[in-house]
Image 1 (cartoon, rainbow, N blue to C red):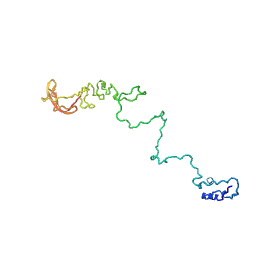
Image 2: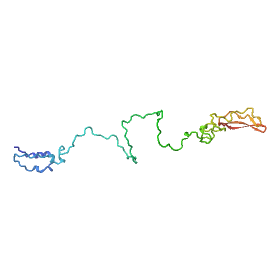
Image 3: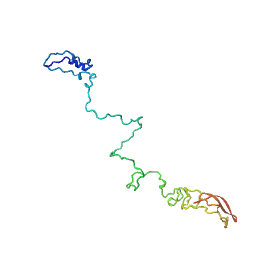
Image 4: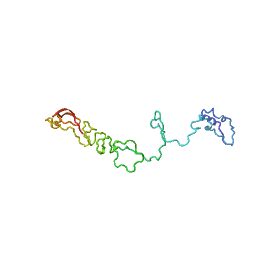
Length: 250
């Protein structure tokens, strides 16, 4: 037979601390101390009967289940978050491209530099579709007479943008065409007055013909100006007239 101590509830109350107001009063009712062979009354369950807000920290609380995470706790997020307003505007419309995405690692390193590779052009059929419309560039037009001088570039017109330039030109000009004095397209520049004046003066050869005309000092270049002596027939003799003149060429 066992004897139950009356001091046990008081000892538990002291251990509980400030739980007196909420401690079940039934625990302090007078118990039957008669010794009997029956079962021993249960010991008070503090974890169940005491309020949770006053219970010791190690009892009466729901503890997390499972293993706690291992390793260091995460620190600050990497990098600063973007500041400012979010971009505005319409989102792209239409279906997303279909097909398989490329697999494998992306190429690394710098892009190739230097000239493009040379060699033969790729062979095979030309791409289908309509040809580009509009005027063709002038360089692609062949055997054309763009200046309407009756000569095409295929017939020897060396400047098909100037009607004064063509293979049968006989006129001399004092200003170039496209930087050239070759107006007759024979690749040779001819001067209109290539000679100096005759020191003997003007001479009547017979009839109405006079000789001795020419430049007084030097033969000028195409388009340049010098004094020119011109022998002209007057009556029964030749008369010399000297004036500034610009050299003509073709």
